[in-house]
Image 1 (cartoon, rainbow, N blue to C red):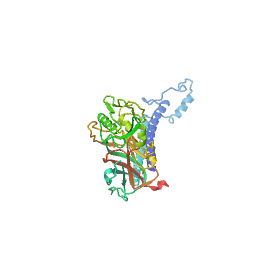
Image 2: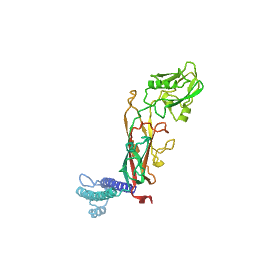
Image 3: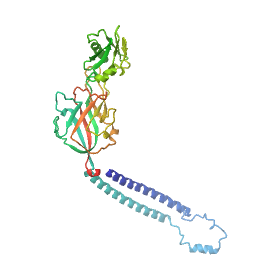
Image 4: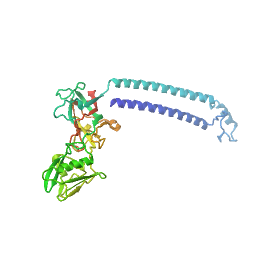
Length: 396
C-alpha cells in the first residue's frame, strides 16, 4: 500500500507542476501584453497612444513640458525587440526548469520501480487444482475431494505445491467443468406419491431423458408397486407439462415431504411446486418441466468467510458457475464448460488475516444448494490466485 501511495503522490505532484507551469507562462505572456497595451504603447509605430486627457490639455504650461522632458529618459518605452527578448529569456528559463523536473521525476520513478520489482510486500501465486490428481478409492467423488499440498496424509499426487504460509488473499481465475451427463440423478430420483390413501416411494432410473422419455419412465415406476396399476402419464410437447391420472382412483404427490425426507427435488423435473398435493383422479404440472441444472457452487472450507460470497447456508462460496447441457434429446450430452471470472471480479481484492494452507477441499454443489453436483465422477480442474504476505512487518 505504501508503494502505491508513494507512486501516486509523486506522479500527481509532477503532473500538476507541469500543467500549472504551462498555464502560468501563458497567463504571464497574455498579462504582460495587456499591461503594455494599457500603458499606451503602440504595437505598430512604437509611439505612445495619446489617450491621457491631461497631456492633451491646452492649458499645460511650459514648466510641465520641461518636467516631462526631464523625465523622458525615465519613462522611455521598451521597443518590440526588447519585449520579445524579455519573453524569450523567460520562456528559456521556464523550459530549463521543466527539463530539470522531468529528469528528476524520471530518476525517482526508475528508482521506485526497481525497489518494488525486487522488494514486493506481497507476492501472488497461481495454483492449478485438478480432480485427476486424487487417488481413486471405492468412494472417491470428483465433486467432493481434497488436495494435500505436502501429501502428508496421502490421497493425491503432489510435488509442486508445498505448504503455503502467510496467505492473505484467494480467488478463482478459471475453471474447467464437464456438463452433467444425467438429468435424473441421486439428487432427484426419489418420489413419494399417495395412491388410494396409501403412500408409496418410487425411484427413477438415473440417466439422461427427454420430456417424453421421462414421462414413460415415471409411468413405469408409478405402476410398479403391487397395489398400483393403470396410472397413465402423458407429456405435452408444446407446454412441456405432465398430466398424471387414473380412471377412478384418487392419487397425489407429496413433493415437499419427499424433499424433506429424501432430499430430492424431483418436483422440478415434472414442473410442480414444492408443496404436497391433494387427492384427485388427475393432476397436471403447475409449470413447464425443468430437466436441467442451472449452476453449481464452488465451496472451499479452508478459505475464510470474509473472502467468500454469502449464500443462505453459510458455506464458503468461492464462485457460482453457470452450467448447461448440450445435445438435448440425443441421450448423451457430453460437453466441457470453460469458465473465467468476470473482469470486475479481478478489479479488487479482499484480504484476510494471514493463514497457512496445506490443503484445499473442493466441494461442488448443484442448484439445489445442499447436494453435491452429480457429474458421474467426470474430472474437473480449477486455477486459483493465492496472495502471500512477504513483508510480515506490515502486520505489526
